[in-house]
Amino acid sequence: MAVTKLSSGKKRWQADWTTPDGRRHRKNFDTKREAHDHWQAMLRSIRSGTYIDPKAASKLTVDGLYQDWIHRISTVGARGRKPASPKTVDNYRRCYENYVSPRWGTTPISKVHYDDVAAWVVGLNGQDGKPAGPTTRREVALHFGRLMGHAVKRRLLAANPAKDALGQMDYVPARVKQRQHVYLTMPQLASLAAACKGFELMVMVAGTCGLRWGEITALTYGDLHLGAKPSLTISRAYSEIGGKLVLGPTKSGENRVVPLPKVVAERLAATAGSGSVGTRVFSGGRGSALRDSTWTKRHYSPAIARLRAEDPDFPRPTFHDLRHTAVSLAISSGANVKVVQRIAGHATATMTLDTYAGLFDHDLHDSAERLNRALEAMNWK
Image 1 (spheres, rainbow, N blue to C red):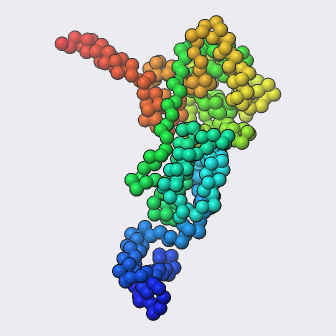
Image 2: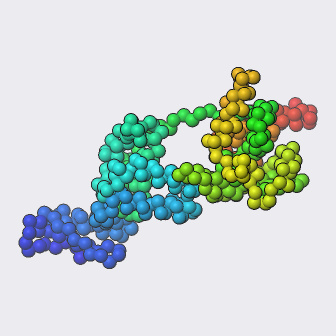
Image 3: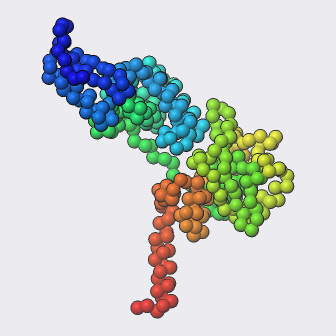
């Protein structure tokens, strides 16, 4: 099986090869050199394990690729280690249905080209028909790039058409600078908690233990350990998906145990008798799960407004800033990075340092001062 001369036809030379799956392929060329070069290229790719069947990519549409990809994401995850969270899957689904499918859904993946992708992202419109902002364009571009990367992984395409020859996506807008974290002092946290009438304990737990909204609203009395060394077990979290609250795993997919200040633990112990092991610690008036937007509008925002009416300089923290506050209070109390990592629920200590690097700056001088005291105690000169 190599190159043969045909007895008739406009293209007289034919390259003939068999792929690893046992299928025989033929392609005709004008000259013997073209046929031979193509045959050799196919042979090299088959031997190296990089062979791509060009017909497969022409038969599969972007919609078809998406269905295969989203199934993988929701069952085993992009890396095959664990499924993506329901919230992540929902975000991908909405991004695809709202932006990708209208433009690319019926397009064969072999017809997706870099220049077309770049022009599409640059000129992308939002749901209101107006030009989409940089955050939306960035999200859509990265999502589409991951989708087309799945085609490469499946050996349907030789290269990702959302990237240029250098593997870059230079049309993707830069990340918009995020809002600065707000860190409350302990007195400010206590004032805010007191102002959130009926939810004082919830605010104190958030501001000292660093739980995310979905985690603290999923907390049950069975997750409380109020002994000599009080702590909380964080194993579940609520996510809002399609307007509904869904109870699932934490953002990282991992359980963690977070230390709990004894004063806060004593307050929790006083309420523990009112609920069974599976009862939510913090809930709505009828025991329903709390919704972030509703609770913020009815309780949190009015509390901050009252505090700022008394003191215009009082910060404007979001509820998520209470998580940052917990980290900052832990660091200022001398907690090491591994403890802070556990409180924050980060996958690695490196992630914690990258997120809160500035809060550790004072440790540089504190460390030198501690060494200095040790040297002075030895009367070293």
